[in-house]
Every structure is written in C-alpha cells, then in structure tokens.
Image 1 (cartoon, rainbow, N blue to C red):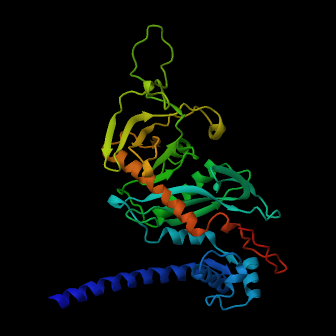
Image 2 (cartoon, helix red, strand yellow):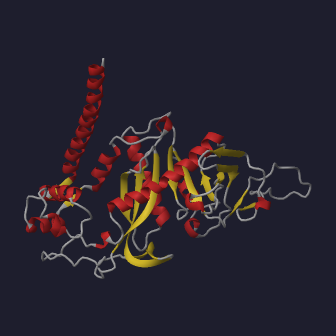
Length: 389
C-alpha cells in the first residue's frame, strides 16, 4: 500500500509538468509564427531576455548569453528591421489557459505603467509620467512612455497575472477612450476564443481611481462585463430619483435623487446591504442605483444627445486596521451591476484587492529605472547609452 501511494504521488507532478511543458511548447511555436521578419533573431532575443540573470540593462548583454547564438550584428538587424504581427499575438494570448475565480469567472485588471525615458531626448512622443516612490514621501514627473496594460488576475496564494494586451498612450490620446477600445478588443478576443460563452458569469474588470469607471461602463454596456472601480473619497453622486407623485403644478419630473456626498455621512441613507468578513474584520456598506450627475465635460464632452443615467452599486469598504497598527481609511468602490446581492458585494471588493497583483507584475517586468534602458539601436548599429540607476 505504501509503495502504491508513493507511485501515485510521484506520477501526479510529472503529469502536471508534462502538461505545462506542452502548453509552453505550443505557445512558443505560435509566437514564432507571429514574427514576420528576422524571426530567428527575435526569437533568440526573447529567449535570452527570459533566461537573463536579473534585469536587462543593455541589448548587447543579451548577445553574450548561451540562448543567443548569433552575433552583435544580427541583434541590431533584428531590432531595427524585425517585425511582429501584434494582432496575431494578441489572439494567441487570448487562447491560452487562463486562471479563473469561483464559478469559472474571468477577472481582468487594467492599469498604466510608464517606461521612463529621461535620458532619451530624441525619442518621440514622450510624456511626463507621474512616478511615486523615487524620493521619500514624494512623487515626480519624469519623461517617458506610459503603457496601458490589461491582465487576467489569478485567485489563491499567488500574485501572478497573465498580460493580454499593452498599448502605448500618446500625447493626444484620451486615456479613457483608448482604454475602452483596448478592453473591447480584449473581451471580443476572449469570446472568439471560447473563453466566455453564453450562460457563463460576466467578466469582471477592475480599475483604480484614475479611470472614469462610469464612462467605461456606458461605453462597454453591450459586452458581458461588470466594471468595478475605485472612486475618490471626495466625490458627489446621486441617489435614485424618488417615486413620482402627482404635482398639481406640473413640470418635468426629477431625473436624479438627493445628493450622496462621500465626505458627509449625514447625506447617506440606510445601506441596502451590509456585509462583514473576517478579512481583518472588513465591513462593507452598499447602496443600489447610485450614479453620477453627468455634464458635457471631460470624457462626455462630445456625447451626442441627452446624457445617460449610468446607475450602479456604490460600496464603502472599511477595514478594522492595517499591518503595523496603521489607520485604514475607507475605500469607495462603484460597480456597474445593479441589484447586487451580499455575495456580489463581497466578490466586488475582493476582486478589486487582487488588482494590486498587477503592481507585482510591473516590478517583475522591471523597476521604472530599469526600463529606462533604450532597447533599440540606431540605423548605424550603435546602441544609446544606458540611463543611470
């Protein structure tokens, strides 16, 4: 009996490894087909980047690794003249085995991370990127390229994510419009790859306060998605309009209900839902059909016709305390789903907390300083100088 158990235990990891190896091999073959020019050189450069010990400071260092079997000239030729079919690669990524939450639900996160280019004044379309943590209790604006990422989050005791798309934001781009188009493309590719089928739970998309979550909810309302985003604690929204009563004076009925001021508890009605979770005692209050009062400004400036009523579930998450006895200010979240249940409310804020796994992904890709390295040489075959750390 002991021998049989030992054999069974030893076979399971081997089976898992074989399956993972087959999946990785299939992806490598499909990725190779996405390279349309100088594919052998680009493929070896990718292998070298993945096998490099630590951050890649210069493309020249990649040519010294065993995975790169060609010379310096091939490396410069691949970077200058190589081509990749980005659309095909996006389709390949959407067809991979993706992590799922309870019920087979996909949870996506969207965020922006800069590739700082402070020492590359000749690089086109640089923007001033807001960067935190480079000095004590301070933030800075540093020239660079901001990229919008969409990644699949994973449940459990892990911080791995699966990046599905990355788009560089230009100087004239509307970040909300670019993100909406990016998310639409990702969701449509997931549906085309049978990652979502009719009857499956809606795909959850979580975002931070930098995004206009109500605008995204309106633009993506025809897709099987639920938006969950953090909103600023100084916001003012509106409650649903009260039931209509006969007014002898006539006039137009109100479109919005009373104000809901996040900073003034006296404007809050009794929450429709209150949940308590043993997450360091996390208490959540939720109000249904809360919406912003929209105006023809910002992302709604070019909206044709009457402004819509974008209703959703407003949530206030309060954690008892953080580590090291730090104060925990409440977090305000808004979801595009109306008529939410207590299980929905807990699912929303727990999915939002997993959004921070994307920060670990950015660190894994490379610290902002590490990504200042200019990865493309000039036409004459010279690499620009690495930025100082």
